[in-house]
Length: 532
Image 1 (cartoon, rainbow, N blue to C red):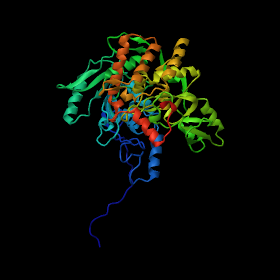
Image 2: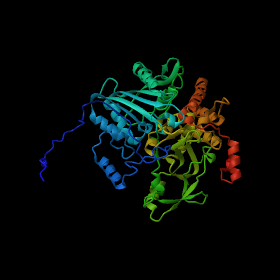
Image 3: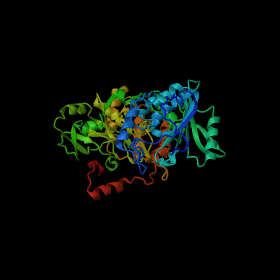
Image 4: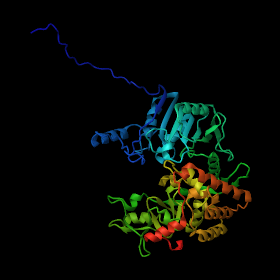
């Protein structure tokens, strides 16, 4: 039956595809990329895996990862699979025209991680009007701009193209997360209006205050955007600490605006010593690691190791190895590589400011550093003594605090590569007399218990940790600094650092050294003999 309605004929047509979102034509790109690195958000109930979805087959996820890896990524080069934040920056860079502006909410690690170095270098050399905003709160949840994130974040705003402000940035640290859109808008207006602001290179005198009415909501500091290094001005309440740290890294001890700067020999750890290989080279599977790890370490064990962080038995600068390695068959070649980096000096690259008392640990026998504890191997073992003193002093603390990623509450993390670039005292510049004195000081203080770094000053008791104070005094005197005003300024430095939210974290209790030792005895747990 013919209905009278004709059926349309199907034809093959050639479609002229065109680029819907062309490169180099956008005025503004604003993005808040998802956290996609496995276990990147330790405080989330459901960690987000890279390209994973509830109903997505793993084969599809792997295909997507391979597709990303195959793309031409200029800005995110070197980022690997450390998270897709860098790839989103790459995309924005391609889309923006000269004079266009990008705005991002990103994990705070993008400001410190070595895998994100290329991203920072592009912002530092190819953009201008760079503004970085973080929040100086103790709880990481309150340091996030995103609603469902349990980790510290940052805002980065940058305009494409070289301009008058290329190589410098405006760093804003807020006292709290804006409670409303209206407050956020007003804070943004205040930031935009702050044209003449204090600089990192100024004498320690804080940044410029951001105020809404009579309420202080944060501080602003203009800083150089260092190429090849992390950006240290994050989650900071007292900007004068950043200014002090900047001068210290540049070989000047400048603790207060009214004090004359004192020259101090400084360099980077990698210029002095060799750090550990990857922990996988110690105990990794698949034939990579040299050892099986066994708990405990007796004097007769051939390969002592310092592996586990246990603050209760690591309150002194000298500590005991807590594991030993059992050499695997065929592990001899890797063993020689590990032993070439063996040392008595170790550095905690995953420091908990509010739990650990020392960042550098000395073992009586050379011990293999594993995981959180990296070896720091000097050509001359005598250099270990001043390195220990410096690293555990307040001056060493400020170097670590500025250099570390402060994404989690009360913690400052370094990667092994980052440890190599950590500013430290140039111990090779010390005289023979100073080296002898350093060893004597270390032997005097090595068994003295220190309080955790966040308790170097206890505000409630208005009391300094007496051992840390003595260590600071002896370090200054070792360097020939006897000026009473400088020693008094060191006390102020301890107070301000202990008040920093990123150091204090969310911990409320205080360390009770006597009760801690009693608990170790009651549980029958091993502890150093000098704890008695």
